[in-house]
Image (cartoon, rainbow, N blue to C red; front, side):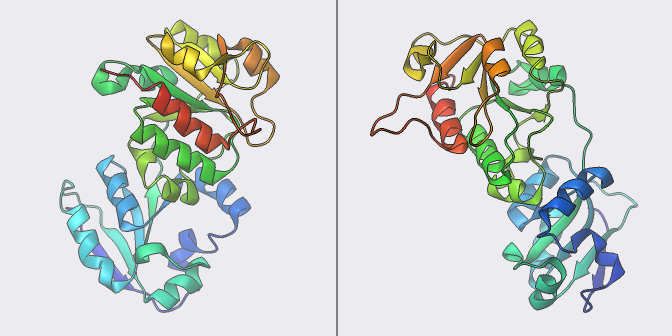
Amino acid sequence: MPRLDLQPVTDPSDERLADYVSLTDVALRSRHEPAKGLYIAESSTVLGRALAAGHRPRSVLLAPRWVPDLERMLASLPDDDVAVPVYVAEEPVLEAITGFHVHRGALAAMHRPALPSVESVLRRARGGAGARRVAVLEDIVDHTNVGAAFRSAAALGVDAVLVTPRCADPLYRRSVRVSMGTVFQVPWTRIDPWPDGISELRDAGFVTAALALSDDSITLDALVADPPERLAMVLGAEGHGLKPVTVAGSDLVVRIPMAGGVDSLNVAAAAAVAFWATRVRE
């Protein structure tokens, strides 16, 4: 396994901890993390899934009692000559460093992998058989909703997730945590440009279904009754939903039937309903 360089930390202002300072400042982190090629993995569960996906830590920050867990997680990785700095601090010091109570006492600054092409993601899904169910997240800005959509995608048989250029970062700390690390299980990348990318999906054999309220929409039940072989479901931003140009460019417009005078669901809830209803039944 990689060699761990355990380094005790007692001073929250220690310059070695720059990657972990003030993580509650959303604007700073959303600009800073992609530029540095890093993301933050929080909790041993999330870190374990990131490692299993082949991601490598730049450093780890944790409480002393989590050191054995870290050693177990790294034991399956190949040996290399690169030591991983492990900053060990008591939990009050961790909170002073990050600005919040560290969930399960562990954080890791992870090297961000290069994003694959859309074509590669679609082709490699399902063990190389190719994706049959794809979710497209258009301009969803809430990190919680992005993380929840990824968790539903992993649980309900979605083969790949594509995020538009203005969509929130799936590897932002809160997205990763809400997804319980499933952002590392579901193949994903950014589809850019958008909505011009609809034509790329169509060329790959996908029927694009925009989830939106429209006079010419069909119900989700009707879609399920005659599902296409390859389906890309497009879900829109909080509030105003999908862009009109996206709806107009999609092959189908699909609505979830509602009762009780409710006309729409939160995008994460709508994603879960649509993913379950359209899952491939082998």
